[in-house]
Image 1 (cartoon, rainbow, N blue to C red):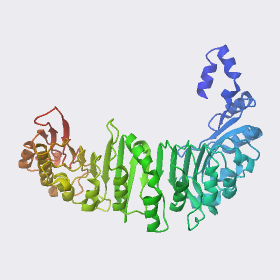
Image 2: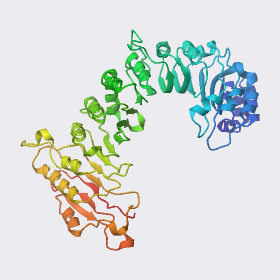
Image 3: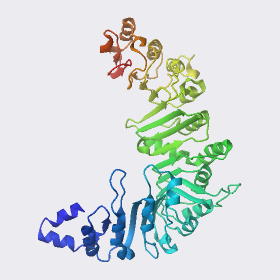
Image 4: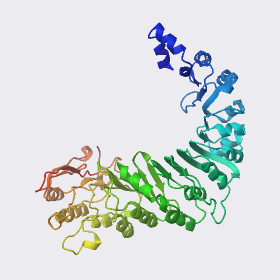
Length: 514
């Protein structure tokens, strides 16, 4: 709006042009001064209005009641509505009856409140069947209404975003699928925390697949049965740019296994396409009482949380889907991130070795304080893959690995030295390329134990690092509080002794004061 008023000040001619264009004055916002809104209501003529009222968590909310009183006389012109409300503000909303709404976006929220506190304090929003049928863009968060009637009347939607729909189990899976089937032009689908009736035991909800050729974004962060119903019913669209599957629960472990190994099979090519286009992909190995694995691609183009599936089964699924897929040639990377002890497991490392696209391994200390052993990982890095270890032309394990990140490092250097010596020695025994390795062993936090308990890097170790084949430089630092103790180093620059010139900074920083 400020830009619009700036245009009016260019000249008298520009002012007359701007004032005489009703379509420029259709945005009515609670953040605008009341006199600006009143002027816009006059100058917009008979044009459809865009009603907008944000509610910041850090600012005093605008006087919504006064704002609504100003625009209620023009209710018949409301075309797009985007409101962020507190529960008590909902009672001030008019009844949406016989309106030709194009967009309905309502977010009922109170900072620090849970859904169980918000919904009982919120009045139901009244919307007529005719208004439901006119809406193309739906985005509703914690909005109480007659959801069963809403799904009976939604049709020809282009965007359907529902977050926090607790209808007492009145919504059926069949109603949701009927709505999708009636929305050929749907582009965005997001379900988060939808409370629905249980699906039929035979799961035969839809006799034919739903064709949604324009669907670009799919986010399902709701119960497992609903997620399965939706993905089984939808024919895989040709140009999906976002896929986010984070089911909150499955009724049984067998149901979760069936979902990933059966229902998700047709969606494998979508995962492959997003992986190929990604610049940075991450596999997160997390342990929180039960093993859990997440995978996401850069800019959240894809996020999968393998709820209900064991760590090994999830890794096997990823291996089968993206294991042999080449990522983008524009410097794409695949990172394995672990904040648990799972990299001690031989079965986990065996599966990860079958994913040749892995370029980075990052290890952090688990939140429970346990210190994982790096020995199994270093042993794997130091030798060829198991199936070529005794051949005349061995293949290095993790052949694309270029970065090993050991933040919060509390291990000695002996295993690292041995791994580097053995890994780089393969350059003379195999025709396969062994890439340079960027090794970071630093910490962001002060060392949690006393200074006297800190390990000291012997100069013989630093000398051994310097003498490694291809290491051109070793740098060290020390703690001022304990002069003479190397505390931050060594830092290695690697320059191969022969062949095309390649260089990479390999940094190994001992924990200490930055």
